[in-house]
Length: 369
Image 1 (cartoon, rainbow, N blue to C red):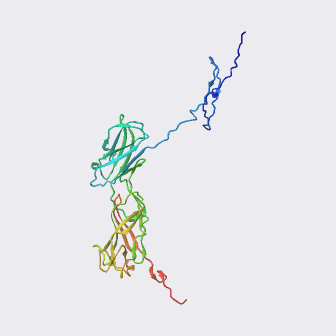
Image 2: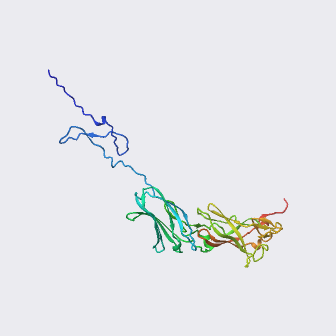
C-alpha cells in the first residue's frame, strides 16, 4: 500500500526569524521592514526584502571643533634699545588634515616685504593634537616707528602650501603728548602695542584710557582739605597700569603756602600715586606732608611744630585766595603707550562752611522763639 503525504507550504516571513529596524521620516522608533514578493524570471520562490532608503533620513554628524591658538602677551617694544625675544605658540588645529607639516614665522615691514623668516624641522601632525613651539623673533634689526607684521604659519612640508596662518601688526609706544581737554572729551585707544593669543586666534594688544569721568572740579569734603576722592578715570584693560610720574600742579603766586617747596616759576608740585581697582583708577598723595594744626599751614618737609598727614590743607582764611585756582594733574609716560598729558581741573567753593544763610553750607539764625 502506498501513502502519499501532502505538504502544505506556509511561507515564513523573515521577520519571524530576525528583527530588522526600520526608520520613518518622523522618528527613529523600531518597526518591522516591509516585504514583498517580486516574482520574475528565474524566481526561486523565496521572498525578497524591500528595505527603506535610510541614506536620506539618517546621518551620523561629527561635532565641529574650532582651531585653538594661544600665546602669552608680548609687548610693548620700545623704539630705542629694542631686543630680540622668544615667543611660544600653542595650537591644536582641526581644520588641518593629518599630514607632515612645517612651523614657520615671518616678519613683514610696512611695505609688506618679508624681512625675516625662521622654520622648524618638519614632522607628522595628527589633526587636533596640541603642540607648542618657541621661536626667537628677530625684531631688533627691523624695528621702527612703522611697526612690523608677524605671521605664525603651518605649512604642508611637501607642497609648502600654507595650511593655517595667524597674523598681527604691532608698533612701538607712541610716547606722544595729548591735550588734556581732548582726553576729557573722548576715549583714547592706542594702536596695537604687541600681541597675545586668546585661545581663538592672534590678538592685538591695545590700550584704552577714559578720562571723561575725571571731572572739572576738585572735590572738597572738608572745608580746608583739598581732596581728589571724586576725581578718577577708567583704565579698562586686564593688565597693570605703568607710569613714570603723576603730579598735582598749581601756581602759588600769592605765596599762600610759604612752607612748601616752589619751582622757579612759583609752581607747587605735589606727587601722586595711582591706585587701580578693576577699571577704576584713583589718586592719593604720594609723600607724607606736615601740617600746623593751629593755622593749617602745610609743609613738604618735617617741622618741629607740624604734625604728619596724608592730606593737603589750605591755610585758615586762605579759601578766597585759592578759590577758582586752576590746577593740573600731570601724567608722564602713562600706560603701555607712554602718553603724557595735563588734565585741567579747578578748585571752586561757592559756599562757606558756616555763614549767612544765603551763602553758607550751615547758618545760624538768631531771634526769639
